[in-house]
Amino acid sequence: MSAITSRMVRKQSGRRRAGGRVGRGIVGVAVAVLAAQLLSVSGAISPTSLPPMFEVLGSTGHLFVDPSFLREVLATIQAAVTGLAIATAIAVPAGLVLGSFRLLNQAASAVVEFLRPIPSVALIPLAILLFGQGAQMKVSLVVYASVWPIFFNTIYGVRDVEPLAKETARIFRIPPLRVLTHVLLPSAAPFVATGIRVAAAIALIVTISAELLAGSADGLGAWILRMSSGGANLALVYAGTIFAGLLGLVVNWLLVRGEQRLFRWRREGVGAA
Image (cartoon, rainbow, N blue to C red):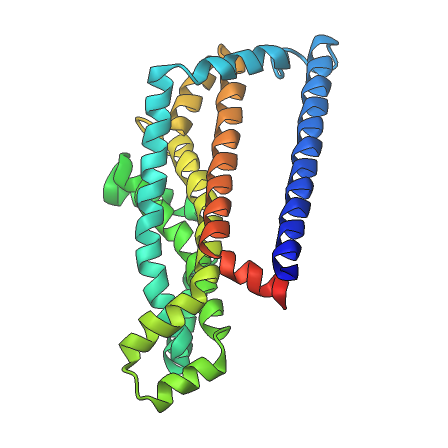
C-alpha cells in the first residue's frame, strides 16, 4: 500500500513540476514577444529588419490553415522522417555489433572518427551531384547527420548492459545473434531512444538547411527562401521560422512522451531504488 501511495505522490509531484515549467516557459515567451514588439514599434530596430511581432504572430496563425504552406511542411517532414528511419536501420545494428566486439570497434574507429566531424552542410554540393535537388538529396544528408547520435548511443547502451546478463548468455551458450537481439538490444533500448530523439532534431535542422542552401523545389526551407526573395515578405519569413521552431518542439515532445511510456519500467525501477 505504501508503495502505491509513494508512486501516486511522485506522479503528482511530477505533474506540478511539469506545470511549473510550462507556466514559466509561457511567461518567458510572452516577455520575449513583448520586447520584440517594443523594439520594432519604437524604431529601435528598423521594421524592415524586425516587423512588429504581433503582425508576425498573425501571419504564423494563418500558416496553420494555409494548404499550400502545409504541403511544403509535409515535404520537409517526409524527408526528415525517411532519413531518420534509414539512419536508425543502419546505426542500431552497427552500434550493437561494434559495441559488442571490441576488435571490430577498434578496426572501424579510424573510419568513424574521420567521417563524424564532417558537417552535413559541407556535403550538400556532393549530394546535389549524386541525387539532384529533390527529396533524395535531403534524405541522404539527413541519414548522414542522424546516424551518429543513434550509433554512439547504441554503443553506450551495449556497454551499459549488466555484465551478469552477458555472462549468463555465455554460460548457456546462447548464439551471438540471439544475444544481440534478446539481451543487448532490450537493455540498450533506452539509450537508442535517446539517440533517436537527438537525431530527430538534427534531421529537421538538416532538412530545412538543405532546402534553404540547395535551392530545393519544395519544403519549409524552400518556402522561407522564396518568401525572403526581395525582402517583400519579411513577416512571413519570421512566421515560417517560428513555425519551424514549433515543429521541432512538437517532435521533441512526442518523442519524450513515447520514451516515458515505453520505458516507464526504467523510471519506476530507479525510483524504487
